[in-house]
Image (cartoon, rainbow, N blue to C red; front, top):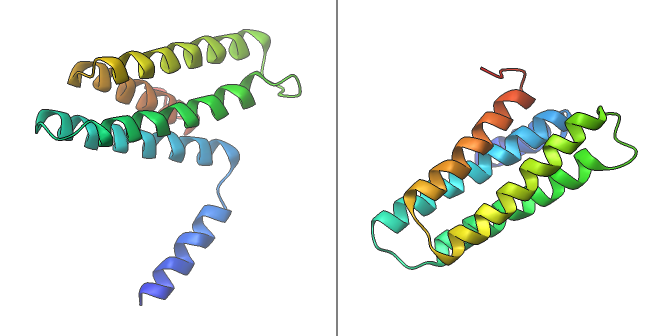
Length: 124
């Protein structure tokens, strides 16, 4: 049964559009950040926080690079907006690594969730 579930999961991932895949990555990063925030509140080590923030940085580095690439057909103002948002997120991740708080993590989670919703066609 587990093998069947794994096969289904692989097939589901292979049929995602690029926007859906980006959305899923952002949501996964948000979930990791939520877990990190819970670990922070529980007084656990900084390791889960740093791992979640590093993952979020990787996601945003890839997302920003893809969105701002010359060959990307997005309008210039959208590319610029994504680039600026990406720079803000990367700086926020660094700031949060230095001095983590649940509020800083919540801001990153909110950004990820809102961008993921927009990618799914649900900007509201």
